[in-house]
Length: 377
Image 1 (cartoon, helix red, strand yellow):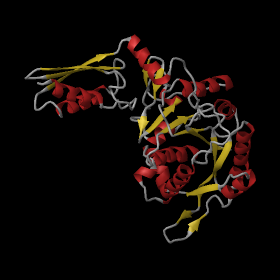
Image 2 (image 1 turned 60 degrees about the vertical axis):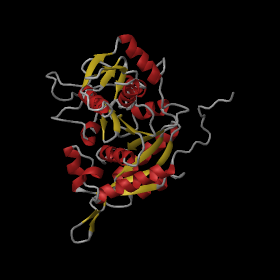
Image 3 (image 1 turned 120 degrees about the vertical axis):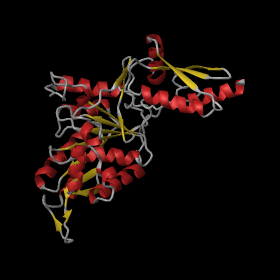
Image 4 (image 1 turned 180 degrees about the vertical axis):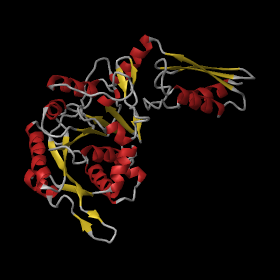
């Protein structure tokens, strides 16, 4: 084979994307070389770690890319593994030489903490569907399950299989978040197991451990370049809310409530605490609002007006972004691990979430008064 053909093969293989890092293999220094003879093409690549969960997919994609330029010759793919020094060089190339919080002051990623005053208002279900709806608009989305004691995001977004959440791939001291529906997701439920190793265990941690967990999610997990990072916050105004304020001072807060007064009264407090730690209230979402009945009537199972009341009480631009009606599909899809915006896109709840996502995506984050990573020469 001529050298130009071999170069075309090398270029084609280099354009293959690592499904976890979402970068081309050439950029990740994973292509070792292409050897050609009149009878065969040999492509040598290296994976980041032994037992890489994406190994089969990478090898298949490399083979197909090489075959597209091999002019009918058979392709053999040789797969190796990076040395510790090569892994370290890769992590420094992707993340920099030192661990840092890439979403702190000066970050251009829009950080939205989804909060509620109390549990049981559907905050996590809303967050998972909102993340997928934003990703479907072409945004690069990350999702942190910050509800350490009551983690549920892996199930709701569709990462749990046979009752078990996936274990994230670890490259050196860098953690790669699993991806579902183009949303990069991390949760403590991916690290905890029962003594028999079968199902997620329970968490009994106090404030310092909770702070450290959130800090590690921000510094050790490699999300890459994100447009939006969502945090599914625990209900109330406890340790995680305070830690998020310190670690993510530029975050916006989306307050979730149900229509009933018992939920809206305490939801107001979560917005007030956010402001006390320097965050801005993005808006309010009323969940479990009036459900449309088969005969055309509506049923206000949890009353009405709670979302508007929270927005009015918080003031200062904290408008009601939308109301998500009670929906059997939303509940069933959560149990099945398929976000409703995908499983039943025409369901009234899915349409309401899509409308909220559109409002959030179209407004953008205000940069007034923020330090930007720009320097003059």
